[in-house]
Image (cartoon, rainbow, N blue to C red; front, side):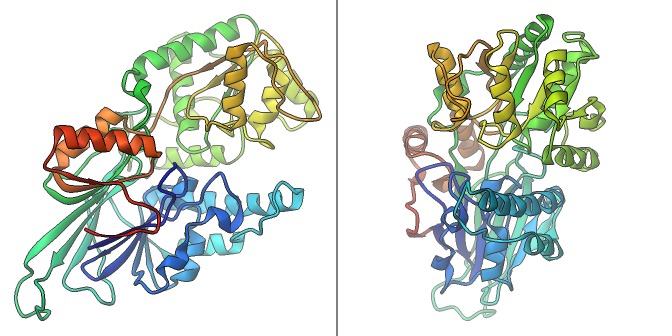
Length: 471
């Protein structure tokens, strides 16, 4: 069994892994780096030129796991593409949206990178998807497969449709002729992808196969974050609700920058709870925008067929208004007092949250509440830093420095397992080897040290990008 990391191994960026197991070549995820443009954002698929690519498995619809799918399909047109039905529904929305965004950014001059695919190519992909239910075995045989290779999806708890991937393959003894006798043993591999050991606001917690495993590919996103393991989601939700109540009570508006998939639906679910409990007035308007509205509709369409804490809950059961387009209407909405749940989560330029922040941060009545991760050099991280230091911020050069008078806070809601929970996955699945993926170097080192301390019988590997490993 051979493993090759195609994504960046020192950061949380484009997720992409290659596994050759039982003679079958499998690509696990095909993400794009959200910090780059054009082909600089795409994994180095040229490394697969002389390797079989029989199957492509997409674990969920976040851009850093799905975004380069049209590119890898062009390079391996014969490969079968696997995903959950919910992920396929989301991909039908998000990939064409990505194509339009790439084209618009080139036209506006915010990038010089040529788009890596267009809307026609993105829309054509839906005919290639093979969709599988959780727990159902599916065929992963390839042209050169030696014996049977099968896959099975497990609920990952990260976002709607997210799965972990279990794979089994027959291992044949050296020099054995295919079919002469039974395989020497069965190889068992599990790829967690992004995973949440604990339930979120809408989704149930993840499920994992029973051990032992030969190899566990384990995400490490929160491995360098000691605060995450000390954070209570229930307490964070209580504090978030109180903060919204405080701002609405003084006649202000609340800006909640969110990612379109996952966090936005969780936030809307929490707002619904706050209204039901009487924490905030039921008539408080909630504004949403863009692709997150279409994604919320898919959440509702799949509520009976995906693992939910409450299958009867509908995101659109929380009354929402479209974000006004005209400047006068937008200013009136802000002045009226409401909750603006809009993209992007990190306040990137040319997004509704970036524009709204400039209109709100100088007024002490308002609040800007972050509910997820903000990359270190992002406008969202800068706003939090400047607010804490009492310093002005420049979000747009034409507007210049602005004094931050609004209430700025961060609440910790994550779709990832914290580092202690990641260790429990190792304990449950009992792997012989663990390959650490999708995290910063510091995160991987902490996880490696702790697995080796508590489970010295387990071999822990931190791969380098482009390094082939014999597992």
